[in-house]
Amino acid sequence: MTHFAFWGQLLRSGGILPPRNGIYSWYAAYAAELKARRPEMKYVVFLIDGMADDPLPELGGKTPLEAARTPTLDELAKNAQFGTFVTLPDAFPTSSDVANMSVLGWDLATAYTGRGAIESYGLGVPLDDETVAFRMNIITVKDDIIEDYSAGHISEPEAAEIVAFLAEKLGSDKVRLQKGVSYRHVLYLKGKEFSPHVAYDKPDSSHGLKWREILPRATTPEAEPTADLLRRLILKSQDLLEDHPVNQKRRSMGKNPANLIWPWSGGRKPQIPSFEKLHGKKGSIISAVDVILGLGLLGEMESLRPEGATGFLDTNYENKARAGVDMLRRNDFVYIHVEAVDECGHLGDLPNKIKGIEDCDARLIKVFLEEYRLVHTDKLRIMVLPDHPVPVKLRKHTRDAVPFMVTGEGVTGDAKLKSYSETTCAQGRYLGLRGRGLMDLLFSPTIPA
Image 1 (cartoon, rainbow, N blue to C red):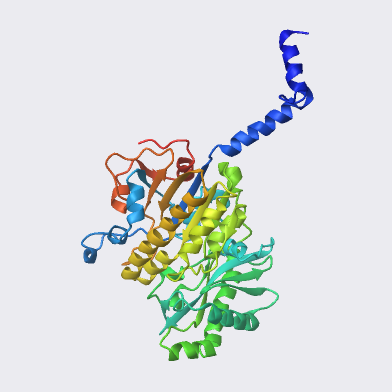
Image 2: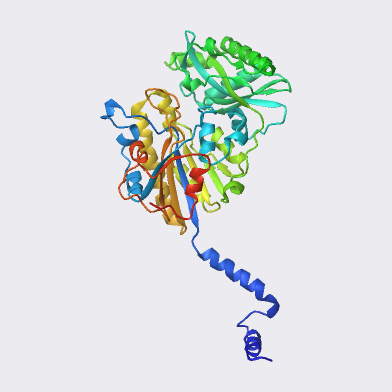
């Protein structure tokens, strides 16, 4: 027996070392324990929908983001890197589903099918191969003009009554309606004869337009029956809704009636790859709106609409923050999406757009960081950005690259830029990123100056 073998046998017999045949399992358990003790990197993206804007004379040449009081963002910006990211490539619609897919790093050319299909999954309704799903707004028209893309942000109970009524009157073995949140719903056409190849005008980009002049149009001969049916459903909805009791009551209260449906962005069953397989990180998503939740579910991410999340200014920011902290117990990455600021841009409501940005700073980002420090020892990297601009003067999405800020563990801050805004990000190091570029930057080991 060698000298080393003698001492090894002695130590094992005394229980100081594990038995020879258990040495590998002992080492594996010990390595796992060491790994559990070592802090890991966690990642959070605060996606403030529609936040980017243009400089405004009434704000002294500032944008709403620059004019807003954002002490939390100001503190984060002291040690951050800045840049711009293209979320709406020219070949795709200027829609939030496209923009958020871009941010999350999915290949639009292979994964994008249409918004209605994504929203359907957000509602928990998977699609078969013979169904085309369209996003369906209930809107306000007045004197043949599109007055309001959201019917005054119709309440949940009113929307439920309207959609149930329409489902009864318009539904068939070929046509089905599914209630979503507020004015956002889904229309299904089932049958091999139906096609998603229908041109449309987004209702939130069509304020002031004559709706009869922009009805759905087929882009291929095969899609003509689909476009024809959609046009007939829209026209019939006007007759059905004009004097509906919900609308009679809304008019008496000075509110916009929900007197027309507007289906748009049809799609078939999407093929979106797993976020974890794509990026090597276990991901999660928090949002009030079905299109974002649908992206999460299709990407095999833990997806949650927290209690009190409404998609508007009355949303419960604090619940979103706490839900995000909790999700990082089980996941590497959380994507916290806020819709309210986008809605204010579409409404042309400058004061409330600024308020929404300030609420995100004080009630979402600040609360998240405070709660995270209480329960986590893991290192944290933070990114803040919008998915697209919605200038309050235009009231619709634009294709301009969006400003982003990344800070936290492993980030070397910019020596000169110390605030987060459209202006500073345009001077940042990481300009004009596209495709997977943003997620690759976020997940890189270090982000140098």
